[in-house]
Length: 356
Ligand code: ATP
Image 1 (cartoon, rainbow, N blue to C red):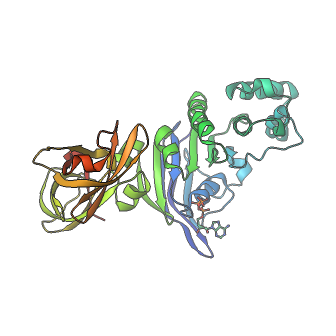
Image 2 (tube, helix red, strand yellow):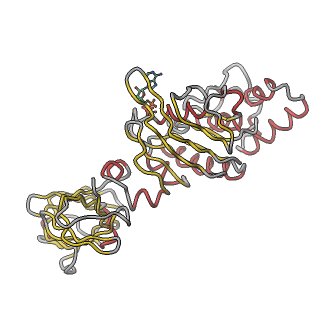
Image 3 (cartoon, rainbow, N blue to C red):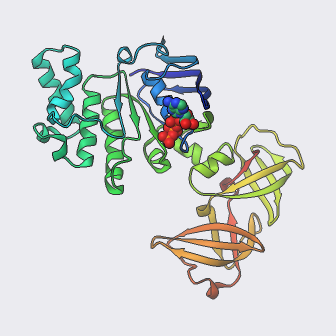
């Protein structure tokens, strides 16, 4: 297990900065995600960690060793690609053995380590098959075994599940987490799939245009997004523009076009002035709906349209001209005409006050 520290990392391409002074600190054994929209620099960061790109400036520390300018094969990282990159003419066992043969490991030891690696991804029964005789999920397991067998210092995964169907993706997510934790591997995982990250990450960084927007646990990033970009990228939300009326410890009272809301500051220590323009972020599932409601953080409106998904319904809720996305588990308010005016309210801790 190693710690990985990225300090002031800059990578410039002819088109501009792909990594703009990125700072990230990953603890030993952590499953760390790099997340962001297409083109934000995720792959560039992973490839820079692997050594396929040399940064323009900055440091990459594996424990205390700066590897930023070290050749890829000397970094001892295990990499798994989106495309699996298995050799079609080799068997599963031969694919997994390849890295060890390159390292001139003895035949007996190769056999033992290949068996162990295949066991750890539950593919020992498929050792003699060729990749084209395997499902996508099984190929992905082989790619993982091939990365693990060399006993890498850290594991780098580039959108490893994007070629799998939704059900397999769910199953493999848990598997990847299990494998990383069993091997006590510091793992860095690139994805644009926020659900993948929320469901298995220990920590994550959200990038936009090569810049760090936020680093935190899934809960921190979802419940206390640092800015509108993160609130909008991770999950769905409603933004309300407003101005600060009062502030207290870690909270503020904000006047918006549809009423006053008390909310929690995204950054507990942030200082807001009276009259300052801010944004509120309120997630669709944080609203409560009923024919009556509390005094605080409550608006009155009606459901304009609804979409039923079985366990949940999504409502287009209107307060005057303002549209709010509201979702309800175990839906009770389908068929808006029957309900007329409804109260919608959100607890102060679910209202996040953002400066930008
Ligand atoms: P995606 O989710 O689409 O894979 P990404 O977040 O991984 O995107 P990167 O591939 O890291 O994004 O690209 C970041 C920026 O750097 C983009 O603007 C991209 O066009 C640019 N870029 C990436 N690789 C190169 C390259 N080899 N040469 C020039 N520009 C590049």
